Image 1 (tube, rainbow, N blue to C red):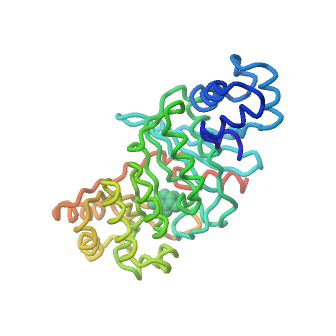
Image 2: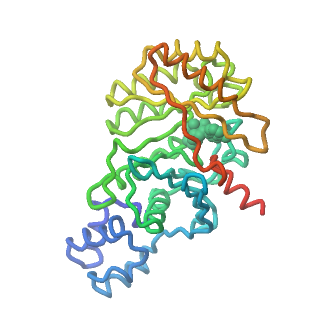
Length: 341
Ligand code: SAH
């Protein structure tokens, strides 16, 4: 495993193998994860010979910033990064009143096939390494010079389809001696891989689980999301209930409103019945149209009515503020356009 994907405990034996005292491990770790060094040369309090041998043995995983787009509307920035093997991933930086939030990708492409999503159109290329997830954040922090308080794993990819690396990433980003981000400020979004949701529940982390629901009927959900052929709504909701029970965390349900597809009164009523027994939060997202598909946004009045129905029935609901619409905000759009060109 590359050094930036390793925990401090794992770095220690490596440092000793190279004939250095174990306190060097903490120094090295701090350079990588707190000071966000980009090269061994910068690590001036480490012996020069040690740095040279690290360089030979453990080349650092680095991302190259290909493009940064800044929204004129809300200051949201979208980053396109090139991975060491030439693949591209995108990440988003958003400024909110409560702090800065970064949305990262967990895979190159995706194999889940959701119909409205641009990230999945060419399938899955590969999983991202923990270091490649971290570096998206590190590059943005270096570039903006600002602290980050929230991380959402909602970019390209299905994070629970890259489970081991995701967990390692979460451990590394939340640990003292790194960016030390609170687990409560991390959200992982999934299309609903039931066994992995249950496994995640048992890790007893304090992260927020966001479930991409998008329809309150199995049949409709299958039309939008192939994963629904594998797991029924009953199974997915049960897994979310279990997650909430094990962790004490309120689950978020994401619901992208698509005109004429899932935005009717019946849909709102069915959604309300489905979620009533849960301590949850619903995030309504006006679908972001992609040119490869016909899906269109529901009218604003429709969206408001949908929200009202849930509110009336005591379900916590918000409409997601659309940020960065002028800069290809939706998953995978920037990367696709860049590859096409
Ligand atoms: N694979 C994970 C995380 C990545 S997608 C998941 O499915 O949750 C992040 C969120 O964006 C999901 O809720 C997804 O359904 C939603 N999404 C994807 N494309 C979208 C689009 N064009 N408009 C609105 N939401 C979209």
